[in-house]
Image 1 (cartoon, helix red, strand yellow):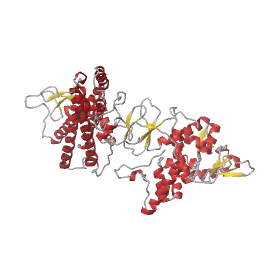
Image 2 (cartoon, rainbow, N blue to C red):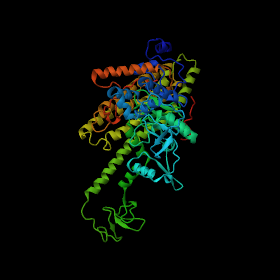
Image 3 (cartoon, rainbow, N blue to C red):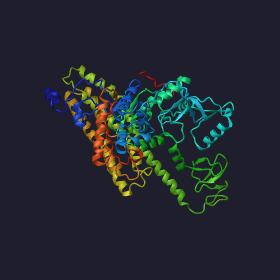
Image 4 (tube, rainbow, N blue to C red):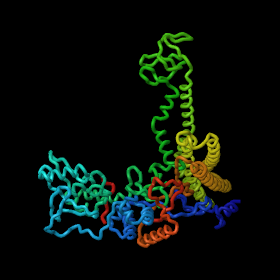
Length: 629
């Protein structure tokens, strides 16, 4: 009999239930078994998230810069200005270029392309009129930006020392334009040149897009000129400016975010296809990429934010006080009734009627209270108290189940070590069974489904309540959809509890026949639970969230293999060829359809579709990003 079970377990290489061994050290948060993936219908996919370390940040930024430089034949600071304007979205930049042309795109981004700018022009005896100090300044002390505006590098004139004609000119310019910057220093007015302008902008944290000082000029200043002028007076500020430019790849990029680990691991995560997803950093932290909080699907980010606030603050305490206490009419402190008499007294000495809350005297009989008559029945106050009570009980229902599954997840986390001991005991018995990966895979499935179950209760609290979707569904529609969702939720919950029971059993004490029966139960339940999770997510996305008319809620898609761990970013492909191919493909499609083919939109607020856009794959001295800004 033992041989029959053993041969059934591992006798055929083609059998789907046969797992490879040596999986004890694999993480339970990621399935590595290909046969189990095939059972659960999870095709193998390339990693959709990359880890950007301090060492690879410069390479990641240079990769995007090089693509734009090759595509549009512009210098590096022009490419950076364009990418920051389009939030480092190359697809969106290509769409704007194809649809509206380079000239319009450059103008909107504040980019003026010139053939060549000499940072160290030869000395000359000629002078240039500075529009700040209204004086003729040697050409070597003046810098001209790509936008053609010229100002002193360091204006050494004091406003009070100018002659009357120059003062009048400066005052008129101050009144009718905003390109002059004056600073008060020891009761004197000092006119600013380029250097002072750059220093102020860097200190204000506006260094990623420093605009020209000229009135109504949208031109972006050359970063090389900024560093050259600022480094003369403040070398440390020039290094800070360099760091800001480097970090702009993360700060201004909607597809890249810092890992929210505490203490910070120094990494950032870049997603390739969809910003509504859950990722795992190389430090081990799993989080929602969209809102940078803990992974919370199937809750949307707004739902989870509201739920976390509700659970952490005193909002439900206020609800309890509303239901079980009444305010004193004198000091307005909440008073709880602890007896049957409707004449209650506050610690401040004021007596009042519990029925209506009105102040009274302390003398009373069985039927009346001195100096008081309740008068007519006030339906509105009773109705408000009843509504608050129902809301509180509803919250307690969903919170208790959310808390129960969260606690179960924490307790079941200790099963990993227990199961390792059970497997070691079975191996020590010299049993013919050598394949125990079904236990590890089943344990992983238990964890994954337990998390989905716990977060499904906050989702149901808001989906079928009045906080977010009061006007989205009729009462009948809400009841039908709630019954549909709760049926699937209960099926999943029932099977998860069964799986938990089988994994907690002392199978190391069982006979081979019992172990094989337990094995088949775990395998079957794992597949069933995976399918139920998929169906629940499909119900949420297609039947509940997609029909919404007035609001848009996106959730991270369900992954059978769990939250995928991000891999470290590596560069090394032909960026120029890829950029040219993308540009020509976009231009061809635009000529045929009149629309840009790139997935990015020109305005994030205009993106009304709930479909997840598909995006293309993107591929010196190091700056310590952990240093304070």
